[in-house]
Length: 379
Image (tube, rainbow, N blue to C red):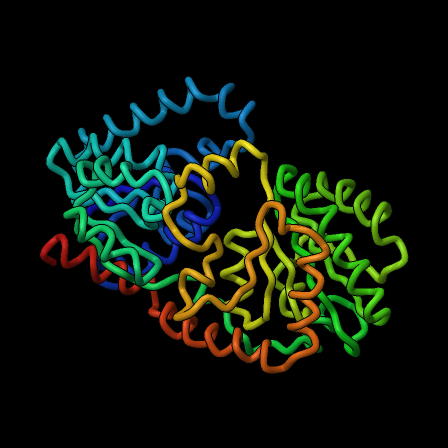
């Protein structure tokens, strides 16, 4: 068996490494090659190129590199179509991998896409392209296969790799000791995002919320993981302007340790909300963007889901406060966080739902993905 794979970023490389290991357990003599990162290479994938060639961030960088990326996408598709592996697996990075999958499938090769694009949430018309590109979609969330079934696309739910990796076994005291801070008292995690655009809209109201909470309880400490050094100045400026007298701890990275160390987490909508759920910490979610983006998603109805945060999409009932746009203010964030800090029943209502979701998502995703691929190949 010969498997060709493409991953375009670090998260895809993590998934790809685990998947290769699981496939090798089923097909001991299989060979793997493609565009890979260090995790995939360590698992035995021959790299014809590295994920660095696809990892481009920022609109300016994307526009600059667009001709190169399009050329690489075309040459990759032609190579795999000519090589004729038994199966091609595209891992996330849909703008690149779905094109390759379609061209390879047209050559008569079985194709798999690992990690569904959020077609169920917005731009649902993309499912037509997926139907032409893929023999099998591997889904991380349990509600996704029904969407694909309604559009006549074969899909399999495999569970979420993060649920295999994360649990709520680490106590706040243990996490605080690991971060080198005092273990006693209450802490609030503040995660305004990992991009400059997110901090532009959320650093200020999150800092104002800290001031609101500190006025109510001066003993509170606020923990902030700085995703990358270039973001530190933005966060420090917001703190200096709006909550200079509060107790702050800023860390380089360590986002999961901060979540674990916190009694409540106030954070931007995104993947971090799923990590917070899996780590078993109560949360309040905020979202604020440009007026045009919010208009497109919320006012024009491009967003097809009732909720924006993954926890509310996954839980049996919506239990996480979502404070969006004009409600993304300290006047709304403060009381929502305070309720979770002060009322055990409010905390338990979230944590009970989170535990159920964790159990549903923890499925040994790599092994289930390998099983689904084997069934597709009749092996």
